[in-house]
Length: 344
Image (cartoon, rainbow, N blue to C red; front, side, top):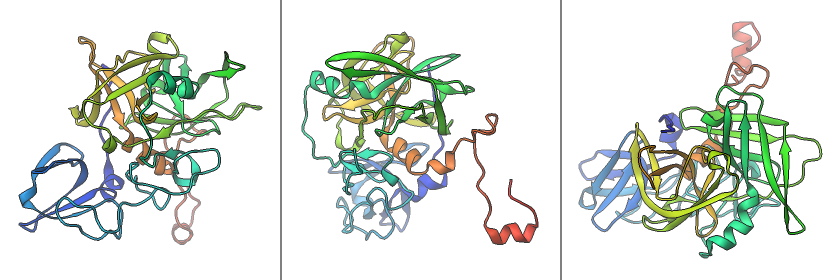
């Protein structure tokens, strides 16, 4: 089994919804599902079922939002992308798109997020349109998959695909005059990575690299259990393999981590590839399977991908010291002066 650890930390808590209960207690977490008689809330280490009759108010993600009636959104609505360090709800965020990107733009135009207004299309149409955005990530110890989040060469993969590696290459299949042209890029920079959420952000820096086809990040809140989904990746090195299935559950807990479970076939080599809904939006990053069963694949929910990207400075990789996965930021000038020595 390919596995990922669980760590949300303080930043996760700051972006969570707050459910105020009638007994003056409160629950902080992410609302995964709302039903007439109950709420399903992810509190980071487990999932709670909260009866509606016990809920006083619900405050949605984002500072400054007013409390709402039980079962209703806050009057101010969720926080939109690009206004802070928290990960907003992709299904509701709507801001102006960055140049070259469709949908709502993430912080600094790094990624595009769906406005939630797309129409379902066939897998055949979507694969033809989005297949070029899915790549094969190679390292001396093995290979995996990845996908571009913007046209400048930034791409997402799994941490375990590149763990312990600095010599990374990315294979892209460009559409040229109706034919596929295979191109290998070897100048690949590790921008950020999070071992505990099994995510890594890379960037192609080859001279003369073209603009790349990219994907739009969606939301797990806009897809229901039982809906059709599909994955694109390189299982066992078989590049551009498409597998289709359904979303089996959105709240499968494995080793303390909440993952999406899908019946779409996932195998070694799919790791780091996208799991799409039928609107062509990424709803997860495939990262593991159960070896002794079939149709038991798992993916990291896209909300965690967005949180990782919005807070990428906290996970920045120090390319000058490959043994150290994190870059320590300089302390404030006042502190530097007080300690009388330069920052590390």
